[in-house]
Amino acid sequence: MQCPKCLKDMEVIDFNGIEIDRCIECFGMFFDHLEKEDLRSLKGAETIDIGDEFVGARLNEIVDVPCPVCKVKMNHVLQTEPFEIKFESCPTCRGAFFDAGEFRDYMEDEIFDQFQEIVRKID
Ligand SMILES: [Zn+2]
Ligand SMILES: [Zn+2]
Image 1 (cartoon, protein in one colour):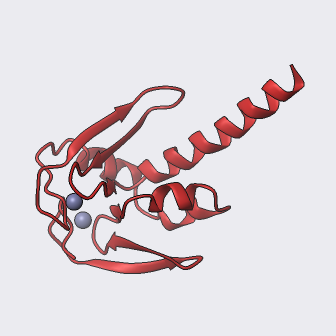
Image 2 (cartoon, helix red, strand yellow; image 1 turned 135 degrees about the horizontal axis):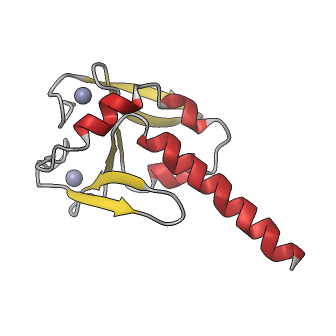
Image 3 (cartoon, helix red, strand yellow; image 1 turned 180 degrees about the vertical axis):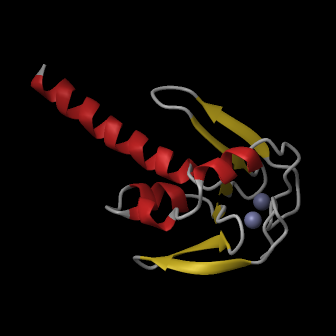
């Protein structure tokens, strides 16, 4: 698979049996449909996001990003609550591309959700 951002090769990495494609150059990652949701529930999954968040933030400026699987233009997703999370989502295969650092933000958001849940239980 070729990285849709910097066009370098992507390598397959394994986290608890879930295979993720990660770019060898910019460390952006591509998740198949529901893979990021599966990873989100696994402790320590943020450790697969090893890239520099400043490099990721710069690459996030690229708006015309083709899905590495189906080659259609991916949608730029920006979620602002409770934390700012940015990624590209494919309308066809529902895969998602995260620039370096973005997946760490996504995992932090999950921890925040769990905290909110605890707060609700106390109320
Ligand atoms: Zn790349
Ligand atoms: Zn796709």
